[in-house]
Amino acid sequence: MLKQDRNSFCTTMFDYYGMPASWPGREVAREKPFAEKPVTIEQAILGDISKALGEGFNPARFLPYVQMHEFEALLFSDPRLLAASLESVDESGIQEIREQFKSPEEINDNQQTAPSKRIKHLNPRYDKVADGVLIAKKIGLDVMRAECPHFNEWIGRLEALAEDC
Image (tube, rainbow, N blue to C red; front, side, top):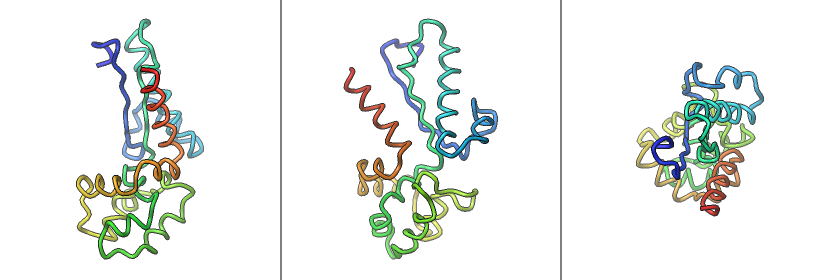
């Protein structure tokens, strides 16, 4: 798209945790503090895309975003609404998970404790696609942005882009 339409913009939402080691910047990011990991990879992806598209490419047209863990991490931004949306789930269980981390963006330790796995453990009927979207709508972008700094930065960049157009 970026190659075919010089007026188009593109963004990404990649999951760091599931990313292979061969991704640009992935190995370097492993050694970085948490907040620097996604930025390191985003810069490496932007560098690769810029190089591939050549001299005339405007890098402002490409806004890579790396979500440190699954989309479901954002749902932990409001434990009360997440619990209420999951039916028969005690809010204290979700609050306990949330309090273990500085930000919902950090919720993950391994494949068994990924955000979606934690939610499924609390409610085995949780469906990533259908339920995840509905819960995100209930929680709202403002709450997710307030709780998730890297996500907030990305949304802010998209908003700034929209204002410039």
